[in-house]
Length: 429
Image (cartoon, rainbow, N blue to C red):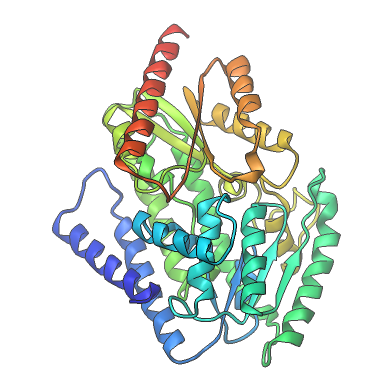
Protein backbone atom coordinates (compact mmCIF):
# COMPACT_ATOMS: atom_id res chain seq x y z
CA UNK A 1 0.00 0.00 0.00
CA UNK A 2 1.54 3.32 -1.05
CA UNK A 3 1.17 6.61 0.82
CA UNK A 4 -1.97 7.77 -0.98
CA UNK A 5 -3.74 4.42 -0.68
CA UNK A 6 -3.10 4.50 3.07
CA UNK A 7 -4.37 8.06 3.40
CA UNK A 8 -7.51 7.29 1.38
CA UNK A 9 -8.36 4.37 3.67
CA UNK A 10 -7.72 6.53 6.75
CA UNK A 11 -9.98 9.39 5.68
CA UNK A 12 -12.74 7.08 4.49
CA UNK A 13 -12.76 5.54 7.96
CA UNK A 14 -12.58 8.92 9.69
CA UNK A 15 -15.55 10.27 7.75
CA UNK A 16 -17.58 7.18 8.60
CA UNK A 17 -16.78 7.71 12.29
CA UNK A 18 -17.83 11.37 12.18
CA UNK A 19 -21.11 10.47 10.48
CA UNK A 20 -21.79 7.67 12.96
CA UNK A 21 -20.71 9.42 16.18
CA UNK A 22 -20.35 13.20 15.82
CA UNK A 23 -18.73 14.94 18.81
CA UNK A 24 -20.42 18.12 20.04
CA UNK A 25 -17.11 19.59 21.26
CA UNK A 26 -15.49 19.31 17.82
CA UNK A 27 -16.01 21.61 14.86
CA UNK A 28 -18.54 20.38 12.33
CA UNK A 29 -16.36 21.83 9.57
CA UNK A 30 -13.76 19.14 10.31
CA UNK A 31 -15.87 16.95 8.05
CA UNK A 32 -15.26 19.42 5.21
CA UNK A 33 -11.53 19.20 5.88
CA UNK A 34 -11.38 15.41 5.83
CA UNK A 35 -13.53 15.24 2.70
CA UNK A 36 -11.22 17.74 0.98
CA UNK A 37 -8.17 15.69 1.98
CA UNK A 38 -9.81 12.46 0.79
CA UNK A 39 -10.72 13.98 -2.58
CA UNK A 40 -7.20 15.39 -2.90
CA UNK A 41 -5.54 12.04 -2.18
CA UNK A 42 -7.75 10.26 -4.70
CA UNK A 43 -6.93 12.84 -7.38
CA UNK A 44 -3.19 12.76 -6.60
CA UNK A 45 -3.19 8.97 -6.88
CA UNK A 46 -4.94 9.16 -10.26
CA UNK A 47 -2.42 11.76 -11.48
CA UNK A 48 0.47 9.55 -10.38
CA UNK A 49 -0.97 6.45 -12.06
CA UNK A 50 -1.29 8.41 -15.30
CA UNK A 51 2.42 9.23 -15.15
CA UNK A 52 1.98 12.98 -14.81
CA UNK A 53 4.61 15.24 -13.17
CA UNK A 54 5.03 16.47 -9.60
CA UNK A 55 7.14 19.15 -7.92
CA UNK A 56 7.74 19.87 -4.24
CA UNK A 57 8.43 23.01 -2.24
CA UNK A 58 9.82 23.64 1.22
CA UNK A 59 9.11 26.65 3.40
CA UNK A 60 6.11 28.94 3.79
CA UNK A 61 5.07 30.71 0.60
CA UNK A 62 6.93 28.46 -1.84
CA UNK A 63 4.17 25.99 -2.73
CA UNK A 64 2.31 28.46 -4.93
CA UNK A 65 5.30 28.55 -7.29
CA UNK A 66 4.95 24.83 -8.06
CA UNK A 67 1.49 25.38 -9.59
CA UNK A 68 2.23 28.12 -12.11
CA UNK A 69 4.26 26.23 -14.72
CA UNK A 70 1.57 24.14 -16.39
CA UNK A 71 0.84 20.48 -15.66
CA UNK A 72 2.61 20.03 -12.34
CA UNK A 73 1.07 18.88 -9.07
CA UNK A 74 2.57 19.47 -5.63
CA UNK A 75 3.84 17.08 -2.97
CA UNK A 76 3.73 18.83 0.41
CA UNK A 77 6.25 16.49 1.99
CA UNK A 78 6.51 17.94 5.50
CA UNK A 79 2.73 17.83 5.89
CA UNK A 80 2.75 14.26 4.63
CA UNK A 81 5.30 13.32 7.28
CA UNK A 82 3.08 14.94 9.92
CA UNK A 83 0.25 12.54 9.05
CA UNK A 84 2.34 9.37 9.21
CA UNK A 85 1.57 8.34 12.78
CA UNK A 86 4.14 6.93 15.18
CA UNK A 87 4.37 3.40 13.74
CA UNK A 88 5.00 4.59 10.19
CA UNK A 89 7.40 7.23 11.52
CA UNK A 90 9.46 4.63 13.38
CA UNK A 91 9.66 2.48 10.22
CA UNK A 92 10.78 5.49 8.18
CA UNK A 93 13.41 6.28 10.80
CA UNK A 94 14.93 2.83 10.39
CA UNK A 95 15.30 3.57 6.68
CA UNK A 96 17.03 6.88 7.48
CA UNK A 97 19.67 4.99 9.47
CA UNK A 98 20.14 2.47 6.64
CA UNK A 99 20.61 5.37 4.19
CA UNK A 100 23.46 6.71 6.33
CA UNK A 101 21.65 9.97 7.05
CA UNK A 102 21.82 11.85 10.38
CA UNK A 103 19.13 10.92 12.89
CA UNK A 104 19.40 13.91 15.20
CA UNK A 105 17.36 16.39 13.14
CA UNK A 106 13.74 17.36 13.73
CA UNK A 107 11.79 14.21 12.87
CA UNK A 108 9.02 15.85 10.83
CA UNK A 109 11.60 17.34 8.46
CA UNK A 110 13.68 14.21 7.83
CA UNK A 111 11.02 11.46 7.78
CA UNK A 112 10.05 12.68 4.31
CA UNK A 113 13.41 11.54 2.91
CA UNK A 114 12.91 7.74 2.71
CA UNK A 115 9.27 7.89 1.61
CA UNK A 116 10.00 10.44 -1.13
CA UNK A 117 13.31 8.99 -2.33
CA UNK A 118 12.04 5.43 -2.80
CA UNK A 119 9.81 6.15 -5.79
CA UNK A 120 7.44 3.50 -4.40
CA UNK A 121 5.56 5.22 -1.59
CA UNK A 122 5.24 8.46 -3.56
CA UNK A 123 5.72 9.55 -7.17
CA UNK A 124 9.18 10.64 -8.26
CA UNK A 125 9.59 14.40 -8.28
CA UNK A 126 10.69 16.48 -11.27
CA UNK A 127 12.05 19.43 -9.25
CA UNK A 128 12.26 20.87 -5.74
CA UNK A 129 11.91 24.54 -4.81
CA UNK A 130 13.12 25.62 -1.40
CA UNK A 131 14.14 28.63 0.66
CA UNK A 132 16.13 29.85 3.63
CA UNK A 133 14.75 32.11 6.33
CA UNK A 134 12.23 29.83 8.00
CA UNK A 135 12.95 26.23 9.03
CA UNK A 136 16.43 25.63 7.65
CA UNK A 137 16.30 21.96 8.68
CA UNK A 138 13.41 21.47 6.23
CA UNK A 139 15.39 23.39 3.62
CA UNK A 140 18.40 21.12 4.12
CA UNK A 141 16.24 17.99 3.96
CA UNK A 142 14.72 19.03 0.64
CA UNK A 143 18.11 19.89 -0.82
CA UNK A 144 19.37 16.49 0.34
CA UNK A 145 16.38 14.83 -1.30
CA UNK A 146 17.16 16.56 -4.60
CA UNK A 147 20.75 15.29 -4.41
CA UNK A 148 19.63 11.74 -3.56
CA UNK A 149 17.15 11.66 -6.44
CA UNK A 150 19.40 13.45 -8.93
CA UNK A 151 16.80 16.10 -9.75
CA UNK A 152 17.15 19.88 -10.12
CA UNK A 153 16.32 22.27 -7.30
CA UNK A 154 16.29 26.02 -6.76
CA UNK A 155 16.81 27.74 -3.41
CA UNK A 156 15.65 31.28 -2.66
CA UNK A 157 17.91 33.06 -0.18
CA UNK A 158 15.76 35.04 2.28
CA UNK A 159 17.93 37.39 4.40
CA UNK A 160 17.72 37.39 8.19
CA UNK A 161 18.30 41.13 8.54
CA UNK A 162 15.71 43.62 9.75
CA UNK A 163 14.00 45.72 8.60
CA UNK A 164 12.92 42.85 6.38
CA UNK A 165 11.02 45.20 4.05
CA UNK A 166 14.33 46.38 2.59
CA UNK A 167 14.99 42.87 1.26
CA UNK A 168 12.00 42.87 -1.12
CA UNK A 169 13.97 43.70 -4.33
CA UNK A 170 16.61 41.07 -3.54
CA UNK A 171 14.03 38.31 -3.13
CA UNK A 172 11.99 39.37 -6.18
CA UNK A 173 15.16 39.24 -8.32
CA UNK A 174 15.64 35.64 -7.23
CA UNK A 175 12.03 34.79 -8.09
CA UNK A 176 12.70 35.91 -11.67
CA UNK A 177 15.78 33.67 -11.65
CA UNK A 178 13.66 30.80 -10.29
CA UNK A 179 11.21 31.18 -13.18
CA UNK A 180 14.04 31.08 -15.73
CA UNK A 181 15.58 28.05 -13.98
CA UNK A 182 12.34 26.03 -13.98
CA UNK A 183 11.61 26.83 -17.62
CA UNK A 184 15.16 25.81 -18.60
CA UNK A 185 15.27 22.57 -16.59
CA UNK A 186 11.77 21.14 -17.07
CA UNK A 187 10.54 20.36 -20.60
CA UNK A 188 7.20 22.02 -21.27
CA UNK A 189 7.31 24.25 -18.19
CA UNK A 190 6.13 27.80 -18.89
CA UNK A 191 5.39 30.43 -16.26
CA UNK A 192 1.70 31.41 -16.19
CA UNK A 193 1.21 34.82 -14.56
CA UNK A 194 -2.56 34.55 -14.85
CA UNK A 195 -2.55 31.30 -12.91
CA UNK A 196 -0.43 32.93 -10.20
CA UNK A 197 -2.96 35.74 -9.83
CA UNK A 198 -5.83 33.24 -9.69
CA UNK A 199 -4.14 31.25 -6.91
CA UNK A 200 -3.32 34.45 -5.03
CA UNK A 201 -6.97 35.51 -5.20
CA UNK A 202 -7.98 32.24 -3.56
CA UNK A 203 -5.15 32.44 -1.04
CA UNK A 204 -6.21 35.96 -0.13
CA UNK A 205 -9.62 34.56 0.85
CA UNK A 206 -7.96 31.81 2.89
CA UNK A 207 -5.67 34.29 4.66
CA UNK A 208 -8.56 36.64 5.42
CA UNK A 209 -10.44 33.75 7.04
CA UNK A 210 -7.35 32.75 9.04
CA UNK A 211 -6.92 36.30 10.33
CA UNK A 212 -10.57 36.27 11.41
CA UNK A 213 -10.03 32.92 13.13
CA UNK A 214 -7.07 34.39 15.00
CA UNK A 215 -9.17 37.32 16.20
CA UNK A 216 -12.03 35.05 17.27
CA UNK A 217 -9.66 32.91 19.34
CA UNK A 218 -8.79 35.99 21.40
CA UNK A 219 -12.28 35.98 22.89
CA UNK A 220 -12.76 34.88 26.48
CA UNK A 221 -13.80 32.10 26.58
CA UNK A 222 -11.90 30.82 23.54
CA UNK A 223 -14.31 29.20 21.07
CA UNK A 224 -11.79 26.66 19.73
CA UNK A 225 -10.61 23.28 21.01
CA UNK A 226 -6.87 22.96 21.83
CA UNK A 227 -6.55 20.14 19.28
CA UNK A 228 -7.88 22.28 16.44
CA UNK A 229 -5.62 25.19 17.36
CA UNK A 230 -2.64 22.82 17.13
CA UNK A 231 -3.13 22.29 13.39
CA UNK A 232 -0.86 24.07 10.93
CA UNK A 233 -2.90 25.84 8.22
CA UNK A 234 -3.01 24.19 4.82
CA UNK A 235 -1.69 26.06 1.79
CA UNK A 236 -4.21 26.25 -1.06
CA UNK A 237 -1.64 25.63 -3.77
CA UNK A 238 -0.65 22.23 -2.36
CA UNK A 239 -4.13 20.84 -3.01
CA UNK A 240 -5.83 19.75 -6.21
CA UNK A 241 -8.94 21.78 -5.37
CA UNK A 242 -7.75 25.03 -3.72
CA UNK A 243 -11.34 26.28 -3.45
CA UNK A 244 -12.21 23.40 -1.11
CA UNK A 245 -9.48 24.60 1.27
CA UNK A 246 -10.86 28.15 1.14
CA UNK A 247 -14.38 26.91 1.86
CA UNK A 248 -13.12 24.92 4.84
CA UNK A 249 -11.47 27.95 6.46
CA UNK A 250 -14.41 30.24 5.77
CA UNK A 251 -16.79 27.69 7.31
CA UNK A 252 -14.38 27.27 10.23
CA UNK A 253 -14.44 31.04 10.80
CA UNK A 254 -18.23 31.19 10.65
CA UNK A 255 -18.56 28.32 13.11
CA UNK A 256 -16.22 30.01 15.60
CA UNK A 257 -18.16 33.27 15.21
CA UNK A 258 -21.36 31.40 16.06
CA UNK A 259 -19.71 29.91 19.15
CA UNK A 260 -18.56 33.36 20.28
CA UNK A 261 -22.08 34.73 19.89
CA UNK A 262 -23.38 31.92 22.12
CA UNK A 263 -20.51 32.10 24.60
CA UNK A 264 -19.70 28.46 23.88
CA UNK A 265 -16.28 26.96 24.57
CA UNK A 266 -15.37 23.30 23.98
CA UNK A 267 -13.44 23.20 27.28
CA UNK A 268 -16.63 23.54 29.33
CA UNK A 269 -15.81 26.43 31.66
CA UNK A 270 -12.62 28.24 30.68
CA UNK A 271 -10.43 28.53 33.78
CA UNK A 272 -7.00 29.02 32.23
CA UNK A 273 -5.42 30.13 28.93
CA UNK A 274 -2.09 28.76 27.70
CA UNK A 275 -0.15 29.79 24.60
CA UNK A 276 1.60 26.80 23.05
CA UNK A 277 4.84 27.37 21.12
CA UNK A 278 7.18 25.66 18.66
CA UNK A 279 5.79 22.13 18.28
CA UNK A 280 4.13 19.32 20.20
CA UNK A 281 3.71 15.55 20.50
CA UNK A 282 1.50 14.35 17.65
CA UNK A 283 -1.09 11.80 18.70
CA UNK A 284 -0.83 12.77 22.36
CA UNK A 285 -3.75 12.91 24.78
CA UNK A 286 -2.57 16.36 25.88
CA UNK A 287 -5.27 18.32 24.06
CA UNK A 288 -8.20 16.40 25.54
CA UNK A 289 -6.55 16.56 28.97
CA UNK A 290 -6.28 20.35 28.76
CA UNK A 291 -9.91 20.65 27.66
CA UNK A 292 -11.02 18.48 30.58
CA UNK A 293 -9.15 20.78 32.99
CA UNK A 294 -10.87 23.85 31.54
CA UNK A 295 -7.68 25.01 29.82
CA UNK A 296 -7.95 26.81 26.47
CA UNK A 297 -5.05 27.09 24.02
CA UNK A 298 -6.04 30.18 22.02
CA UNK A 299 -2.80 30.38 20.01
CA UNK A 300 -0.04 28.15 18.71
CA UNK A 301 3.11 30.20 18.07
CA UNK A 302 5.46 28.72 15.47
CA UNK A 303 7.56 30.16 12.64
CA UNK A 304 4.71 30.95 10.25
CA UNK A 305 2.02 31.82 12.80
CA UNK A 306 2.54 35.59 12.50
CA UNK A 307 2.11 35.46 8.73
CA UNK A 308 -0.94 33.20 8.85
CA UNK A 309 -2.89 34.92 11.60
CA UNK A 310 -1.56 38.41 12.32
CA UNK A 311 0.62 40.19 9.74
CA UNK A 312 -0.63 42.04 6.61
CA UNK A 313 -1.88 39.94 3.71
CA UNK A 314 -2.37 40.29 -0.04
CA UNK A 315 -3.41 43.77 -1.12
CA UNK A 316 -2.14 45.57 1.98
CA UNK A 317 -0.13 48.71 1.12
CA UNK A 318 1.06 49.67 4.61
CA UNK A 319 3.77 47.03 5.05
CA UNK A 320 5.86 48.13 2.05
CA UNK A 321 4.36 51.55 1.40
CA UNK A 322 2.94 50.61 -2.00
CA UNK A 323 0.73 48.17 -3.87
CA UNK A 324 2.70 45.03 -4.74
CA UNK A 325 2.94 43.16 -8.03
CA UNK A 326 2.06 39.43 -8.04
CA UNK A 327 5.73 38.39 -7.73
CA UNK A 328 6.25 40.96 -4.98
CA UNK A 329 3.27 39.43 -3.18
CA UNK A 330 5.02 36.05 -3.34
CA UNK A 331 8.11 37.71 -1.85
CA UNK A 332 5.96 39.23 0.92
CA UNK A 333 4.93 35.75 2.04
CA UNK A 334 8.60 34.71 2.18
CA UNK A 335 10.11 37.72 3.91
CA UNK A 336 8.68 37.47 7.42
CA UNK A 337 8.96 34.34 9.53
CA UNK A 338 9.41 34.29 13.29
CA UNK A 339 12.22 31.76 12.81
CA UNK A 340 13.79 33.71 9.95
CA UNK A 341 15.55 36.45 11.87
CA UNK A 342 17.60 36.95 15.00
CA UNK A 343 16.63 35.27 18.26
CA UNK A 344 15.15 38.58 19.37
CA UNK A 345 12.52 38.36 16.62
CA UNK A 346 11.30 35.00 17.92
CA UNK A 347 11.36 36.15 21.54
CA UNK A 348 9.41 39.32 20.77
CA UNK A 349 6.79 37.45 18.74
CA UNK A 350 6.22 34.88 21.49
CA UNK A 351 5.87 37.54 24.18
CA UNK A 352 3.50 39.55 21.97
CA UNK A 353 1.34 36.46 21.41
CA UNK A 354 1.13 35.82 25.15
CA UNK A 355 -0.10 39.39 25.64
CA UNK A 356 -2.55 39.38 22.72
CA UNK A 357 -4.14 36.09 23.72
CA UNK A 358 -4.16 36.81 27.48
CA UNK A 359 -2.03 33.82 28.40
CA UNK A 360 -1.81 32.51 31.96
CA UNK A 361 1.12 30.30 30.96
CA UNK A 362 3.39 29.37 28.07
CA UNK A 363 4.43 25.90 26.88
CA UNK A 364 7.63 25.81 24.83
CA UNK A 365 7.78 22.35 23.28
CA UNK A 366 11.44 22.34 22.27
CA UNK A 367 11.36 19.85 19.44
CA UNK A 368 14.50 17.72 19.31
CA UNK A 369 16.69 18.95 16.45
CA UNK A 370 14.80 22.25 15.98
CA UNK A 371 17.64 24.62 15.11
CA UNK A 372 15.66 27.90 14.82
CA UNK A 373 14.83 27.98 18.55
CA UNK A 374 18.00 26.41 19.90
CA UNK A 375 19.00 28.09 23.17
CA UNK A 376 16.04 30.49 23.22
CA UNK A 377 13.84 28.75 25.79
CA UNK A 378 15.23 30.45 28.89
CA UNK A 379 15.28 33.99 27.40
CA UNK A 380 11.62 33.59 26.40
CA UNK A 381 10.66 32.15 29.80
CA UNK A 382 12.47 34.97 31.60
CA UNK A 383 10.71 37.64 29.51
CA UNK A 384 7.16 36.37 30.06
CA UNK A 385 7.85 35.92 33.78
CA UNK A 386 9.31 39.41 34.17
CA UNK A 387 6.86 41.29 31.95
CA UNK A 388 3.64 39.33 32.49
CA UNK A 389 4.16 37.34 35.66
CA UNK A 390 3.30 34.04 33.97
CA UNK A 391 5.25 30.76 34.10
CA UNK A 392 6.72 28.90 31.13
CA UNK A 393 7.40 25.20 30.76
CA UNK A 394 10.33 24.22 28.52
CA UNK A 395 9.44 20.66 27.52
CA UNK A 396 11.50 18.68 25.05
CA UNK A 397 10.80 15.68 22.85
CA UNK A 398 9.99 14.37 19.41
CA UNK A 399 6.85 15.12 17.46
CA UNK A 400 6.29 11.70 15.90
CA UNK A 401 8.97 9.39 17.28
CA UNK A 402 9.42 7.59 20.57
CA UNK A 403 5.81 7.80 21.73
CA UNK A 404 6.06 4.88 24.12
CA UNK A 405 3.65 4.52 27.02
CA UNK A 406 6.42 5.62 29.38
CA UNK A 407 7.32 8.71 27.32
CA UNK A 408 3.66 9.72 27.11
CA UNK A 409 3.22 9.21 30.86
CA UNK A 410 6.26 11.36 31.62
CA UNK A 411 5.07 14.12 29.31
CA UNK A 412 1.55 14.08 30.74
CA UNK A 413 2.92 14.21 34.30
CA UNK A 414 4.99 17.25 33.38
CA UNK A 415 2.00 18.90 31.72
CA UNK A 416 -0.17 18.25 34.77
CA UNK A 417 2.43 19.81 37.07
CA UNK A 418 2.68 22.85 34.83
CA UNK A 419 -1.09 23.33 34.64
CA UNK A 420 -1.23 23.14 38.44
CA UNK A 421 1.52 25.77 38.65
CA UNK A 422 -0.40 28.04 36.26
CA UNK A 423 -3.52 27.78 38.41
CA UNK A 424 -1.47 28.58 41.50
CA UNK A 425 0.26 31.58 39.90
CA UNK A 426 -3.00 32.89 38.46
CA UNK A 427 -4.58 32.71 41.90
CA UNK A 428 -1.80 34.93 43.26
CA UNK A 429 -1.96 37.57 40.52
